[in-house]
Image 1 (tube, rainbow, N blue to C red):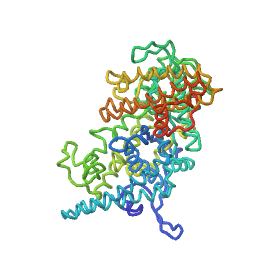
Image 2 (image 1 turned 90 degrees about the horizontal axis):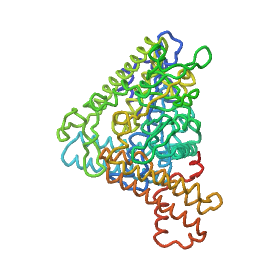
Image 3 (image 1 turned 60 degrees about the vertical axis):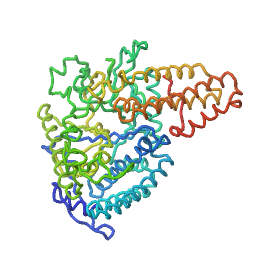
Image 4 (image 1 turned 180 degrees about the vertical axis):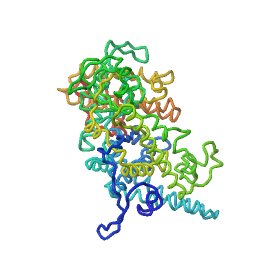
Length: 609
């Protein structure tokens, strides 16, 4: 369905906006009048910052289906390309799609690799062929509606292939171009989504951050200033004890300092970290003032503890905040996120789990009901979706306005609603999600009471005027670290800590600056260390989603790390050793070089303090 006909079914009759037809290059073009930037209006309530977190673990050249590259292909087809289309559609309608998009370095590395580009083209071609085979099956049983849906799938995947080729098969570049135009702010993250609060050495955290920023800058062409903390996991400065029986540390540097040292200005946390924070400093009369921890309870109208305010963070009590924390507004997020009351659970939307045929089956059924068994699902009717999307988009926008209005009533000034979601929710898990985002953006663009903003631009307009110290936590289960440290996976931390210790010792003891071969081997070991530190491996094991795959991938990177560190020591002792490698050692080096093809420019200085 083209943009004009799509909009005739959805937004033209629904959104409170001014529509008119103009002629551009001889064609009629539907245009949209934006009204949302009237910040000086007396009824202006505040800002809305949509934050999407795009991330997948490193799966390139590590299996295809059911675990492996298909994860990447599905996300690209169902989320990253549709969100690009959503941006372009909003721009086409003269509505500014300002939002924040996290693209983790490990994701960027994969999307920009030629192996992905070739594999993704074949994947989309296979999807078109599958839809055509399905059509023949449905014709045999005279099921016209399923045949119609099969045609829709063939057309949809064919258009994705055309879109992919039009952007020169370069998804990161396409996002970078839209970021340069101000439509989207792109966040960086740790190199491989390493879980920072539980890493043993601050040098390991610095390496994850530095490697991630370097990768983002190399691929995007600019250095992001905002960062997605993996799993929104934060740890303040101070004494620290590891989750296993290793010795604790008298002092760890607060994560806000570690990211700020690398030029990061803002990051994101779960709501309870702000709600349970301590007041430290406040900006009044042109300067900063030290305040007590009771300041928040004494002056609630200041906006302390509010998720609708940006807070600068400093956990060591030594001075001004180093970086700004945005808290996720759980009340508004729940409207989408909740598995029971969230919009994606509505019966008209496409069912995710039921597919036709084996392996890469396509979907032909709708959710039908929250408790409906897969065998009782009804067929999907796309024409029933636009009205429901409008209903949900308007409810979502009104929820944003209600929160902003309540904040203004309490504090006397405007605030911000920040909603953080996994990007794959929109399109992959919730097929209609990108169109929901489109309708939200069009609605807010026409509403003078709310302004859409990237988080970076919001801070330029309204800098944080409070400094807080925050407790430890994440956006995982119960808001702590239990998903990533528990009896099921703590064995991984023992191995990971040993790898950290080994790498720290070798980079300190071996003369890698003078010996090129040792340097190369330690760089390869550093890549494997980054890859084994990914938070995804303990996550999929704990969740029971891909237990064997998670264990296998973690241990593969551990094994390769040990191969390279062992060889580095041998070469440091005997400069001729590389010329005497046995067949097993040659194979292990070649195997790692074949499979682990990202982060091509490892810098051992990343691990320096």
